[in-house]
Picture 1: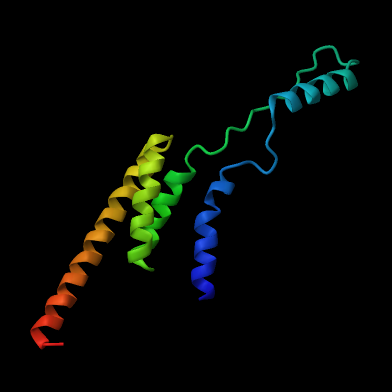
Picture 2: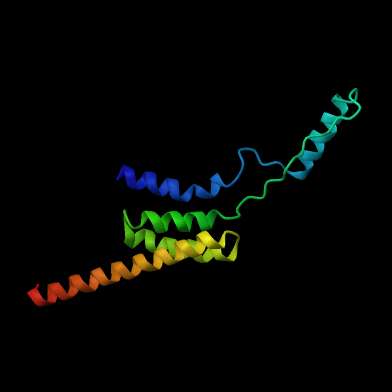
Length: 130
């Protein structure tokens, strides 16, 4: 049970991994640039550091779809397969289409395998008269 909870926490926290540890907004970047320029006015050719703005939420669903698709072949395919399909469909609307498509295909394969296994077990139970 602990492994399942750990796995679910890891899967649903993938979106948080795509964010930086401290998101920099444009206002914070401007303030840091002004402060840095004021502190270093004695240098003639001082180049200010380049701040990049963090744009989160890009391919988090695509990564989640891929992870669910891969892990579904080893653990809980009846749960992770449909999750891979859902995350893949959402991820295809956003960036990261390659990972989203891969997760979607892996999820579909898992759902088909689970359905075939259920049909096999149902036919086996019917032939045994259970």
